[in-house]
Length: 129
Image (cartoon, rainbow, N blue to C red; front, side, top):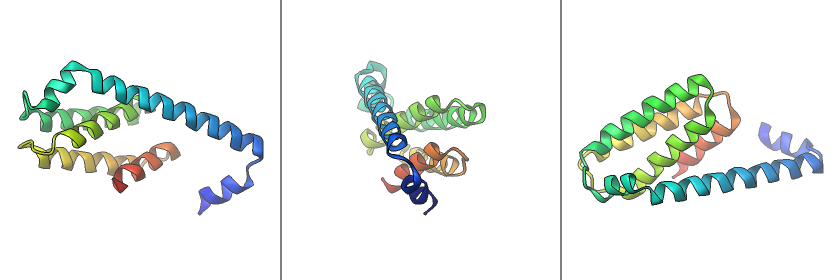
């Protein structure tokens, strides 16, 4: 409700600046996702060359996301979230699937607990998936 009120009270110029900022952020996210899809090491992992490592990788991503949140490196947080999303989308038949999902929900929980509005909205988007 509060975000709706702030959106309604913004001037057209502020709204335009926000939309430009959102477009830039979206473009950056898409390019990062495309980069990760082309990354050969990630493709090998996703292809199942080492499926037992998926749980460990998700734990590693969770650990680094927590560290980056504490440091305020929000771009690195978004990269960690993008990588775990790719793993979730492509590793459904992995034996360590439950560990991957558990770490995913830990990420969502931590993102929802932050004070940063864009990270809270990212956590909400992840939870809705």
